[in-house]
Image (cartoon, rainbow, N blue to C red; front, side):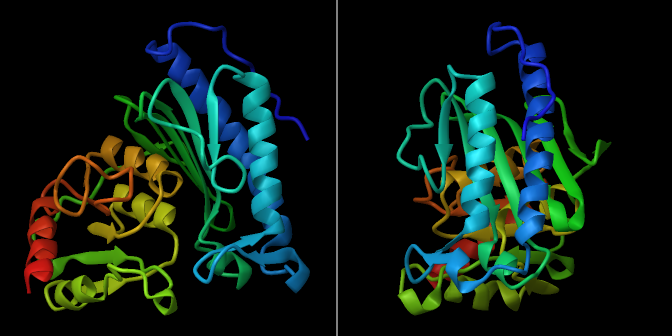
Amino acid sequence: MAVDAAIPTVVSPGRKAYISRMREHMEAIVREAGTIALKYHGGLTKTDIDFKSEADLVTRADREVEDFIASQLRAAYPWVHFVGEETAAEMDYRSGEAFVLDPIDGTTNYVHGLPYFAISLAYLRDGVPQAAVVYAPALDALYSAESGQGALLNNEPIRASQNDDPGHSLAVTGFVNLRSRVQPDNLAAFGHVAYQVRSVLRLGSAAVDLCYVADGKMDFFWEHGLNVWDVAAGALIVQEAGGVVTGMDGGPDYLSGRCGILAGGPNIHGRAVRLLKEAENA
């Protein structure tokens, strides 16, 4: 299964043409990979599902999607490191060029036949996202962005919410598997924020959550304990849609997982930081 997309001439990675052509190629690859994901969606058997831990599932579809995308990227860009959740998670994304992939973000939803899952692919240079694609194939929603060029949903521009009132905000969050007793478990923050906003949802896919912040469906999103492949693509899409992305403490580290992630519209983000700090100090 090959994607018919031109391989760019090797030029300085900082040049806009290089990033633009790469982003277009990433879109084509990820959209094709979506057909693999849909083939198994809601129809997996027990033999197709493994448990990496009490908190993490991995399926036949995760592996096939990652294998396909990795083979396409390595053939087209052999000089770029590949960091994949299932097969190359130990690779360093913080220096040089790197692709970072979550083949199916929202695996529990995927296994149960729910539509809130996505393929999340980002291109980073020296640890900074430069191009991003998030594709939710069951929703036929392809989000993309490149640094300095804005964010798109199915090739149409999107913008983050301009709401500045927490009381009128729709927030979204996520939890680790609570039975695993991993701390922090987000329950205290959830309990505090829920009393301050219109509602808090949990959709089960950080990539989808971030994209819904980017296109204004949600006002802000926060979560502990995520990995770079969960957030790198969605974070750039939020930023290019005019939103703000930080750690939950308001600091710059949102990729390592040490500080969690908080993404929101430009007018609500600072207020969300204060809500989370109130919860921490309660």
